[in-house]
Image (cartoon, rainbow, N blue to C red; front, side, top):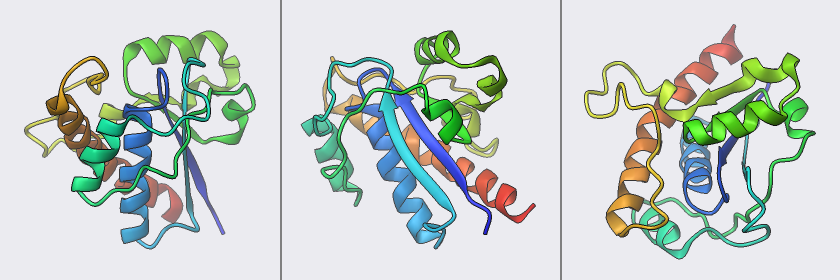
Length: 165
């Protein structure tokens, strides 16, 4: 059976990428594709290895029915470029970091999450980056969820098409 694997990437792997992972896990479960779409997240930095996601991210996610508490921060490893079909970054800073360490043959796997927002989404279509909420208030974590929900809807549609191809 054909599978596809996705790793969401941000700086520390405690806000944006675990939020994207949690949202995507939920959408994959709803679509009954848990055995076909494998999901993980990582950070380009090493500041939060083995830490749970930011409490503010967990709280905002929980309010929408997503559970992040079981996730733990980890740093991207060189083996991840081989292991994953897609490396989905939250912003240009992380795209740059990924490209600096990515083997040339694997660079086509690197994408921005917001690339997957459907054209029909008037609110987020055209946005390039998922906002970094770390130094702001709870509104930033809500915006991250809004952006992740929009982009993950588009991503799951694209992955479903890949699996059926």
